[in-house]
Image (cartoon, rainbow, N blue to C red):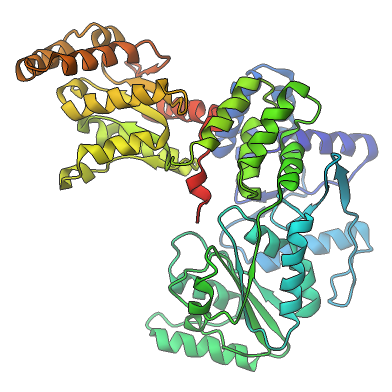
Length: 533
């Protein structure tokens, strides 16, 4: 929620009688008004950052309440036709403004703002996807020009836009939407979610074309219906398939191949996938230059006048390998953070090139179903790349592999439950985690969770922890150095700031506390491997 922007809008409404049209996109106006569900979680994060009773939070809550009470708001739900909904909004704009035109021949102009930081120019304009903006550098202009040229080239039918994750493929394709409308009579851009099956994608396109499938239609019949519809349509069509599964081709959806009336844009991470996916033309999106990366990070993070931060901030920008997506994530996690230590923590994180996971969860099996799996799901939903063994060790995966996974993580959550110390593997994990915490080149973040145990019982080896250590002492009496490492690790983990499960706990609320801690430390958890393919 960009509440500060909402406050400014309502101020202008009051001062200058500005027209405001709230759009409730897949959210209940009541949830916005009273900050429930997702809105509640978002406000909790703002409260943790600015203070529950801070003037900013009070203004934002008031703004959300006010905008929800406006009588002319429109609600978009999943069952609504998106095109019809957009047309409804356009008609409202016509009614209130009177000078917008929706005809294909109408030419639209947009004043692009240029912001200079003394290095290179940066232009931004809406992508058509809400509050996101696309940053148009010289290094991206070439790909944009090639894409528009290819769409107007009669020999190019299926065009692949390639680049690593975070390179800006999707943003580039969306940013040129207005240009496509001047070339084609219709543009179809289905929402292709991760791991979506081919039939779901086909259904989304069919819905846009008013193609109807029977429940028992076989694949061949569905393909033929789509193919026939597109072949019979007047005018030209562009189909955009963002992150289309590389094991398929557009023809398996029913899209004609080498048809001058229908062209396709595919985005994919590997240029080598393009021929197999039926592309006869590919465009590689190159990384930003160091100067462009530095300019973008300055713009997004707001660090431009803090002289003591400039050197480390510039190194952070250069470590992002010219990927706008990674720069955006890093900048978001560091925005308004003026402590040089936090910037150095991000630099260390980005320099740890072997890291594969943001978060590693160490736990005993007794908590798997009642707590740990729920925590894992919540972390993944929040966007963290998280490792949880998920019973894989029962298949014989060696402990050395698990220790490598710890080494390749940026943050370990250790769930200390009553039987944690019974496991030799859990104790070896704990030693490895604390070693990674203390290594200068890693500085891994560690959060202990005391689950149905008292920190003092863990630290001083009492109750179940004392009983477990007595068993280990009998087995490892010839290896006192191993026992001492385990005892030291249990003592040292209790010195760290952690969370203790309350006696009257509510699981979801407890998980939210851990999520908030993770989000507040996101600047320490950036890993290059998430953007390697």
